[in-house]
Amino acid sequence: MSYCRLSSEDFASDVYVYESDEGWVVHVAASRHRTAEPMPAPIGVDPAVDPHGWAAAYLRRHAEVARIIDAAELVAIGGPYDGRSFIEDTATMCADRLVKIVAAGYRVPDGVIDNLRAEHEEMATDA
Image (cartoon, rainbow, N blue to C red; front, side, top):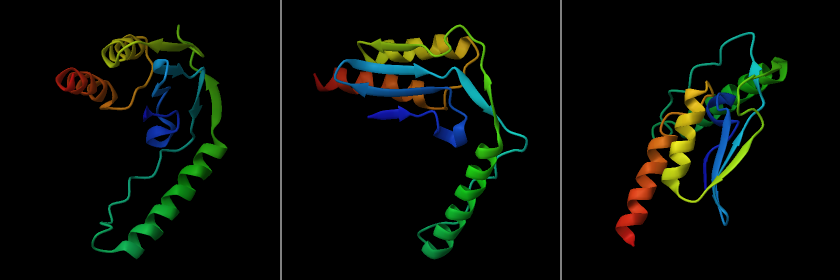
């Protein structure tokens, strides 16, 4: 299961986090996209109300994000964890690792750390 990818939130994530047979894996990016313009606002069309309008808006936004990323400069992050990978034994240990990564200036999408902690609690309850 993937908690986030480097492409998460319009390429604003500096980590790829997932659970594997070995444990919870964190890959830290060595570089990130520097865009010349901001990403377009998220689409606001409700797919339940207008499925065709939502699909068209999604495709337009996706094309715009791809255009911006294609034109972006890839720059080194320059932090202590650039290009490093970690394997943690538990979801809590992975969350703790991500807290350190954030403190070092890397971007982790909102909710990822909380989701890992919640998963650990859920696994403890199920045991």
